[in-house]
Picture (spheres, rainbow, N blue to C red):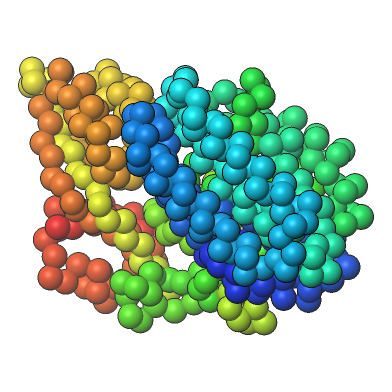
Length: 419
Ligand code: ASP
Ligand code: MG
């Protein structure tokens, strides 16, 4: 049993969806669960729609809704011959559902509203893909991922309830996948109150891993618009090369440091069951791609991971006290309260520096809370660059022409905050 994941770029227009069909045809008769993300940049558009809805901006809301609807309509028209089919009406009904939701006044927290609205991207996309595949002879069953991925009640980044999720996938989903190709959504699940939740941006990889864990799948394949996992972002490093094999730990670290090719939470569930992860190109599906597994035969060449739009905060106490345990716990609590993830930290006797994503308003709120007890200095728009398996040459490549604001080095990894 295999799990395939197709991301937004692989279903961004009608031709892309047809290409998904061509790939699946080559795996005809094999038990496969296909996890699909929202089409193209739909999630971004839906995020804007949530903003408009939450702030009661009727005009923007209407405009965005129409844009999202016509984007999907154009894909449907490029795919389905006969739009008077039942299946087509089902898709249309989903849009009406969303429209009704938008017409009612927004209730509950922002994050709750976010999950109820943004999740439609995956629902639309999987309905369209599943219907198209069925029409073109690739028989499949559409499944609602929310019936299988159970979480706690945190919106936007809930914790998965592994026990119940594993149970229901094994008992209820596995027999279905054995019988028939299954198409389901990435990124979404259901909480204890039976409301929809989303698993965090780019969370469809994580969904694929959760399903694979529950199904005890033989492998997961993430189909991407790149050849595999590269040692650097080819848009930033001309000399980027593809890594043929990677071990789980290296992949987890790369994802943790900000390599966007794999969602950071994806690897652990796979590692725990020794399920290999293939990252392959949907443009050249016959090429080997990258395999992430336990016994990877890794070439230890330097990997470069760059995170831009970073803010460096330097926090020091107002009363000249040292930054030790009690101060640190106050600081960490504030970061947790504001859902701020620390990408790098360093402390000295009287100051504590952290590099975090610039999350706009939320960062300002954090800074103002920190300012009650601490002096906070800010360096905006810096870059965090991590070089794994570094050497002198690689360090030069990463830092030439830039000012180093902070440096941290272990035996295998070096990180710089650069301006
Ligand atoms: N559609 C979601 C996003 O764009 C999830 C995913 O693509 O993995 O973040
Ligand atoms: Mg995506």
